[in-house]
Length: 219
Image (cartoon, rainbow, N blue to C red; front, side, top):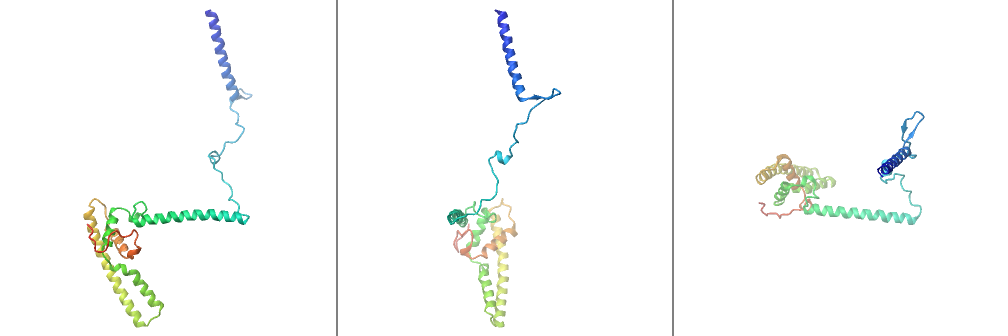
């Protein structure tokens, strides 16, 4: 019985070895010198964009009929409407003061505090745009030299007054911001210019919109 069992085990081992040899022979080929090598797959290796399912080709042909042109126009019109809707929503968030929609120059609690300080009182710099319009109007109407000289003198005086007010405003907002946010790294030049540019804009056109009224105290 032991002899028969040993012979059966030997037969099983031989069958396993034979199957392994067949698998190896199926995947490898020996050349004339007895060296084994793996044959080619029979097809080239696919490119990365082909493997990922991405196809690159020429642009689609232009519409041939009026119906196709109208269909393409409706498709493009829908995408433009979506972009306009997204832009309107983004501008609405900017006007409301949403930090995620604001520009980098307007972000942060320091800039929000400076905006409240600037919006709480009127400034001479707010007359910059009307003053520029007055100068252009005097040039277009070709007024007398006397009137033009007076207008030029008035504009120069206003520009000097605006510059002095901008310097004083920059110092004021820098001192208040440093007292309110002692741990923040505040640049006097950058913060002062930000306050001056904010004060030179018309109140209704300021972005974000003012959150305080004129005369309201800013803690």
